[in-house]
Structures are given as C-alpha cells and as structure tokens.
Amino acid sequence: MSRPVVNGMCSKEVRGDPKTAKASKARPGTTLIGRHLKHPLQNRWALWFYKNDKSKVWQDNLKIITKFDTVEDFWALYNNIRPASKLSSGCDYAVFKDGIEPMWEDRRNKCGGRWLITLSKQQRHTELDHFWLETLLCIIGEVFGAFSRDVCGAVVNIRAKGDKIAMWTTNTENKEAVTFIGRKYKEGVGLPTKLVIGYQAHADTATKSNSIIKNKFIV
Image 1 (tube, helix red, strand yellow):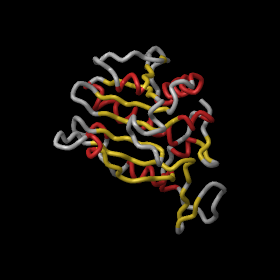
Image 2: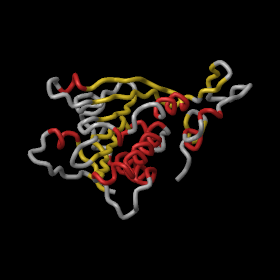
Image 3: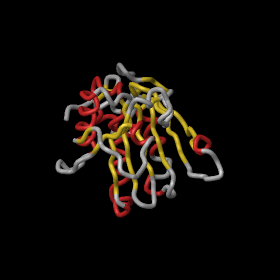
Image 4: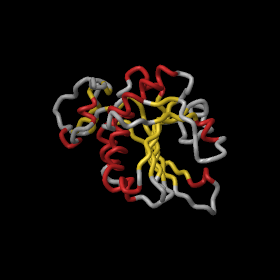
C-alpha cells in the first residue's frame, strides 16, 4: 500500500514517536511550538464519547471531549485516554472531522453509510484496540487519497454481545469512492483477505425492523 501524505509527511510518520519531533529548523508542513515541531494533519478531528444513561435522551449522552489537528496532539490524546477495550458496555468512542457530529441526522452523514467490522466478545481483549487504532490511523492519515474527502469519521461500539468498529462515509451512491475506501480500509487494518466486511446505508440502519441489515456493498 502506498504511503499517504499528511501535509507533507507520510503515514509512517503519523505512526512515529511524537517525542522525536525536536528540531532547530522547521521543515515545510510543520508548525514550530517552542522548541518542538508539531506536524499538522490535513483535517481537524474531534473525539466524542457516548455513555448509555437511560435517564437521558440519546443526544444528551453524546459529549465532545476534545479536538486535535496535529500528529503529536493525536498521540498525546490516544495515549492518555482509556483504551476502547476498557470501556463499559454501552459506551462508544467516535472520531469525526471537525464540524460533523457522529449521528445519522448530520447533513454530512444522512445520505451516507458505514463499513462495519464486527468482533466477538473474545476479541475484545486481543484485537479490538489494535483494529480501532489502525482505523484511526487510516482516517487521520488520509490513506484513501482523493476519496478521503468522503470519509466522515469512525465509531467503536462496546456491547455485551460483541463490539463493532465502523468507518462512516458521506454518500452511499458514490460506489467508486465507497468500494475503494472499503478495500483500502480492509487492507489498512490488516484484516484477513478471506474475511468479508459489509457496507450498510444509514437509512437502512435507521429503519430496520429486525437485527438483519442488508449490505449495500461487500469487500
């Protein structure tokens, strides 16, 4: 897989140790903060947290935690929050582009859908955190090239029956973008080639009458 560019850097640098960002001279695409370089991402992102408090309406359970727009700020955040595998059942993390709320009703989401990875309860403590981190690196690292503009964000759902990780895109009708993103996503997180993942339209999810939702696309 080719290395995506993040404001003049490749995704390998997104994965790097932010402590190595010391330099006396700023390179193009970097911001000098004191004696440290900060490497800007192409987009600003927001971390959201959802806790299932049944005494509140759904929207009141969803809170924005913070925003970040540099590689260093992402790692500072990721390394200082509770891992997804340690969240209580019924909780979610969501990371979305600034200005997009992690709900179907947002204008950038309402005509879109999601690529979905479903994990068993046994995978929570072996693979969940790995897949979630790789998902985040895919979206903030803009690994989808020109189609990265179609990516809205990603969500991890912690549930008693099994956890889910989803990458949301903005338009289900853009088949070229959706399928390209799905193939790159599957490759980027390191899923087995033989494992099939599906893409579901939010409109179908919102109107489901049972637990079975038809996949619009598969890769």
